Length: 314
Picture 1 (tube, rainbow, N blue to C red):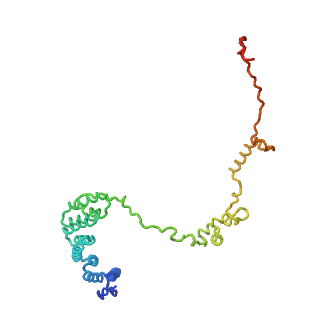
Picture 2 (tube, one colour):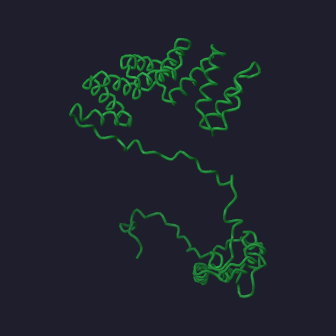
Picture 3 (cartoon, rainbow, N blue to C red):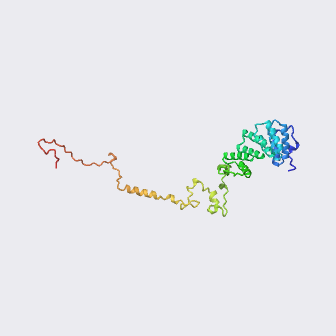
């Protein structure tokens, strides 16, 4: 690592260097763990491109990683004067103020960070820590506890802070709501079609393999291609109704019990019916059985002189 010394950093910045080349050199130095080379490169780059806050923010961040919190606090404050809309600069300055013991400045910076988009959990945790630096533990406890309850008791940062202050204020910490905080794995599995099927090309037919225990050999499974659906019921069926895999398909040629019952029912139902056709095709297809109709007796007019004329005949 000593022999590395980030080539771009050792030779310094020249007129030929571009911001992309500087960032690439810093990234290589950070990967190699050479924070000194990264600090020197970013310091020179922040002076050369003074209107670009990105180099100054990265420079302050490297200073914080090196433990130079006072220098990092000054670097962040300098960036905030040039780019007051940068949340990362405001948050970095607030965190550095906590580390160097500037509680009042940290409280103001965290309050300003809320307006720039910092979450309330992180901001109130920072404000509570800034109050503890000034021995205002009761006020810090109230702020942290109120925000912890408002957020549904889900913030681990606030929960850790409350556990730190609990022995000082003599109050119990509400339990952490871990039911809604279950860490769900977000890695998506590859789609099945994106990768080859492990069972299609990795068969092992050695002794003890699944194929060997199932009684399937390589000749039958791979070379004969007997697993194709269109070849299951073709002429490859051997004598006795068995396929090349030994599957008995002879039951397919036998009528089922349901078919036999239906056949017998139809025979019984049609046994008493005469379904033969008449040779005379001139008659109607439907034969109507004619029955002799009794000769109608025309009633006679009743005799007015006969008192029994309207009586029925016996």
